[in-house]
Length: 500
Image (cartoon, rainbow, N blue to C red; front, side, top):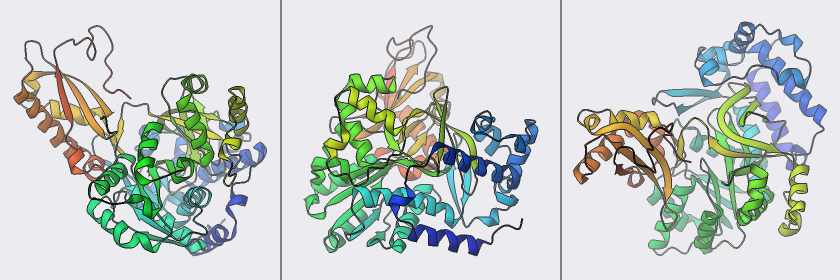
């Protein structure tokens, strides 16, 4: 069958996007229809994506034998190592043609070598529905003039340009949204809000949580009254606490954190996978205040990101604590393991669990706009020892190179602990605790030299770090510990290079 032309595809899907109301887009579909949707995606990819055809053939799998959801869930997982990095970029695209896409984003790997992710206009329309959920259900932006200030980094990285395009698609649908793109230029963001903000009924800042907090704190230090602009925040790339949300809410004058904030669970690989809703935030705030309930629900005493997702757009599975997802994109992905730890909870299971803890989030919210019976996904973060800082994935390998520099390597064992911490004012900083070699004493000169070496290699190897993290937050706080330090480097115990 001859593939639909790019023009036909764009026109058809744009018409559907602008004409189908959000409520209809997010209706709850029966399980058999969800299964049919995902099986149709599989057959399309197995037939039309050269790399996936080769991948299945190498595994001895005939696509026409995959007839049920159970069959689908027995397919081998794919990941960057066994799929994305193994084939040519054009083979990963439909019909083996990069030209079928009109945009390419890049994400950094552990060596700083980028992975390229092509996409087409219609891929953005799927993701624009996630933005529409937030702007419609949380911010009521369908009937409020809204200035959307994109504070994600601009360039080849996925956040800034993708967000800009999705917000503009909402404007095409009829939302009174005006977009401006200062990127992560803090002075420009503050100037824009002060000079343009009063022309709109609300101002939405879209960016990484710690950077948005820095913008807000800098504005307060300069005498800005954030409350007059009716600020809303859209965030991605970080797990943050409800204490953090409370603090920022207070500083922007928010009286309703469940509706004034929304975090997205997204990735360069496939755009936005899920998003916070007033319902998910209300539930998470209850769980934050009731740690016994959180541990009973999630199995851990730490609080993950909690979002809702549309299983017809991004189909999730859980295998051995790892999240797998399948979805259409410029590079379509089938049972893709992104190395995120987490789990799934149906809408019904969630409400029943909360009822057992005598909590009714629907009653608590009062305003039922945006209550969609969508399933929940919770995310603890990457399982492959990365830490996330201002939206940049920071890898132990980057730090290792810093410690392997001449002279430095004579002072250290090579062991370290990488983590993101918060100071008393909830500002994040990058902490690296380094184990000194036997007989080497803690000295400030050595600490400063090690700090400089680590920073130099982070900037050299990790383009996300160099471009996402504001300069004043890039220098890690290095702490030196003696060999075998009981807290960080106990003898005889398998070492972990990161602490979440």
